[in-house]
Image (cartoon, rainbow, N blue to C red; front, side):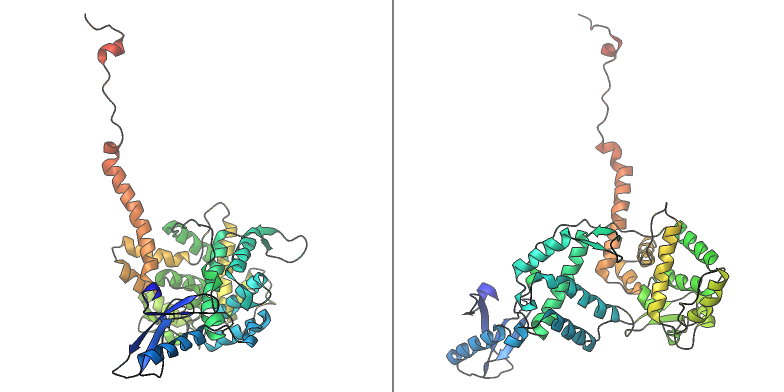
Length: 413
């Protein structure tokens, strides 16, 4: 509403909050509409008054009550208490295990901003950002551990999470704060990363390496084949249940998919038949835990740390380790990531003539993300066409030289 609001109320901290009055569904009672704490939406509350003058006074009280400082107990909440409450609320909201682990870790990083969460101001948040970016970190423990500098991209990721957590949990759910200080911090500019996809040669080299590394074991090759064909996320692939394999299709259920949406991938017949043959009783890749031991023994790799109980998270760690080992085995070649297979599915769809919405729906990706990949390809294609058709026109044309002057003869008088 802002300056266009019909009414305004002054808060104790000096802020002016605009509000309006309206009646809903033919009711004689006025309701007050005003912006929420985080400024992203509006709230509608009843004033319980039928007279406009009395409704204005009641509306002011409603707005003040909503924006009143947090209760003293909440204002005194420590960082440890906040972490406990946050983890409880994340689990109650059905957050993924990775989110339950990652969000509290970000809060632990930010606790140096102030002694209490309720005292994190915009200035304190900005100081924390400046110190975080200029600081260093180690990946190992010990005095001899190597230190690394933090990148601006890491800071951007941390602040995005803090903004989200502060607005939903610290402000709305726990009422510890009335403002989101992380929305006002100034962050360094970062370069847009180029779209990196795998070439056919890279894919062939990776699959050959996998087959040789695992001595012809079928499961790893099938695992990465499904990743390449469906363009799915790694976590979604590892969590597949056997019941998801049916009628030549693979169903990624909403309960295990990161996007919380069900989608279907149609498999080539030979790949579908191979998956039906190796599928476990509960999980699709369940035989991984029972079969890997024998191949590790053949490779002279210790097996004492192998857990016989299948866990999708352990399978995900194994897949990431495979990518890391492949990169270490090819130090002179461009590094690859498992997510590159997902990007390749979209970019190859574009080259095949599929529109962006069709490709995005097929791999379970947002249209905006897929459009970014499409635009990267289109830009290179446009640059190629422009160079072929206009390079001769755009370059300066050489002027014909004066034949007389070039031969050293003087012009006739």
